[in-house]
Length: 108
Image (cartoon, rainbow, N blue to C red):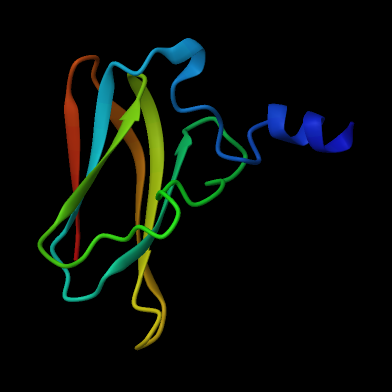
Protein backbone atom coordinates (compact mmCIF):
# COMPACT_ATOMS: atom_id res chain seq x y z
CA UNK A 1 0.00 0.00 0.00
CA UNK A 2 2.88 2.42 0.74
CA UNK A 3 4.22 1.98 -2.79
CA UNK A 4 0.85 2.84 -4.29
CA UNK A 5 0.68 5.98 -2.21
CA UNK A 6 4.18 7.06 -3.25
CA UNK A 7 3.44 6.48 -6.94
CA UNK A 8 0.33 8.63 -6.61
CA UNK A 9 2.47 11.47 -5.24
CA UNK A 10 4.67 11.53 -8.31
CA UNK A 11 7.83 9.76 -7.14
CA UNK A 12 7.74 7.88 -10.47
CA UNK A 13 7.63 11.16 -12.42
CA UNK A 14 3.89 11.01 -12.97
CA UNK A 15 1.75 9.92 -15.89
CA UNK A 16 2.82 11.75 -19.05
CA UNK A 17 -0.45 11.00 -20.83
CA UNK A 18 -3.18 11.03 -18.16
CA UNK A 19 -6.37 9.50 -19.50
CA UNK A 20 -4.62 8.81 -22.80
CA UNK A 21 -4.41 12.52 -23.67
CA UNK A 22 -1.15 12.45 -25.66
CA UNK A 23 -1.54 15.60 -27.74
CA UNK A 24 2.04 16.89 -27.75
CA UNK A 25 5.65 15.67 -27.92
CA UNK A 26 8.97 16.28 -26.28
CA UNK A 27 11.85 15.62 -28.70
CA UNK A 28 15.31 14.88 -27.33
CA UNK A 29 17.85 15.79 -30.01
CA UNK A 30 21.34 14.46 -29.30
CA UNK A 31 23.81 17.10 -30.47
CA UNK A 32 26.59 15.74 -28.25
CA UNK A 33 29.31 13.27 -29.18
CA UNK A 34 28.08 10.68 -26.65
CA UNK A 35 25.13 8.29 -26.75
CA UNK A 36 22.18 9.26 -24.54
CA UNK A 37 21.13 6.21 -22.56
CA UNK A 38 18.51 7.60 -20.20
CA UNK A 39 15.79 10.23 -20.38
CA UNK A 40 13.82 11.14 -17.27
CA UNK A 41 10.66 13.17 -17.80
CA UNK A 42 8.30 14.30 -15.08
CA UNK A 43 5.43 16.71 -14.72
CA UNK A 44 6.61 19.93 -13.07
CA UNK A 45 4.60 19.18 -9.93
CA UNK A 46 6.05 15.66 -9.46
CA UNK A 47 8.29 14.90 -6.48
CA UNK A 48 11.12 13.52 -8.64
CA UNK A 49 12.22 13.06 -12.23
CA UNK A 50 11.07 9.45 -11.97
CA UNK A 51 12.28 6.51 -14.01
CA UNK A 52 14.03 6.20 -17.36
CA UNK A 53 11.44 6.79 -20.12
CA UNK A 54 13.59 5.27 -22.89
CA UNK A 55 12.28 1.99 -24.31
CA UNK A 56 14.13 -1.09 -23.03
CA UNK A 57 17.47 -1.44 -24.83
CA UNK A 58 17.08 1.84 -26.76
CA UNK A 59 19.41 4.82 -26.76
CA UNK A 60 19.89 8.03 -28.75
CA UNK A 61 23.18 8.10 -30.71
CA UNK A 62 24.83 11.40 -31.65
CA UNK A 63 22.92 13.31 -34.36
CA UNK A 64 19.68 11.40 -33.75
CA UNK A 65 16.55 12.24 -31.80
CA UNK A 66 13.72 10.47 -29.99
CA UNK A 67 10.16 11.70 -29.44
CA UNK A 68 8.14 11.15 -26.28
CA UNK A 69 4.35 11.50 -26.36
CA UNK A 70 3.00 13.71 -23.60
CA UNK A 71 -0.11 15.68 -22.72
CA UNK A 72 0.25 19.44 -23.07
CA UNK A 73 1.64 20.92 -19.88
CA UNK A 74 4.73 21.66 -17.82
CA UNK A 75 7.64 19.17 -17.63
CA UNK A 76 11.12 18.75 -16.18
CA UNK A 77 13.56 16.68 -18.24
CA UNK A 78 16.94 15.11 -17.53
CA UNK A 79 18.95 13.28 -20.22
CA UNK A 80 21.96 11.17 -19.22
CA UNK A 81 24.91 10.02 -21.31
CA UNK A 82 28.55 9.00 -21.32
CA UNK A 83 28.68 5.84 -19.23
CA UNK A 84 31.98 4.78 -20.86
CA UNK A 85 33.83 8.06 -20.31
CA UNK A 86 32.10 9.18 -17.11
CA UNK A 87 28.46 10.06 -16.52
CA UNK A 88 27.04 13.48 -17.36
CA UNK A 89 23.54 14.81 -17.77
CA UNK A 90 21.61 17.76 -19.12
CA UNK A 91 18.72 19.17 -17.11
CA UNK A 92 15.80 21.26 -18.38
CA UNK A 93 13.14 22.63 -16.01
CA UNK A 94 9.74 24.23 -16.47
CA UNK A 95 9.36 23.22 -20.12
CA UNK A 96 5.88 24.27 -21.27
CA UNK A 97 4.72 22.01 -24.10
CA UNK A 98 1.71 23.35 -26.05
CA UNK A 99 -1.13 21.15 -27.29
CA UNK A 100 -0.39 19.86 -30.78
CA UNK A 101 3.23 20.96 -30.55
CA UNK A 102 6.67 19.42 -30.37
CA UNK A 103 9.15 20.92 -27.92
CA UNK A 104 12.72 20.08 -28.98
CA UNK A 105 15.51 19.93 -26.40
CA UNK A 106 19.07 19.79 -27.74
CA UNK A 107 21.39 17.83 -25.49
CA UNK A 108 25.07 18.66 -25.92
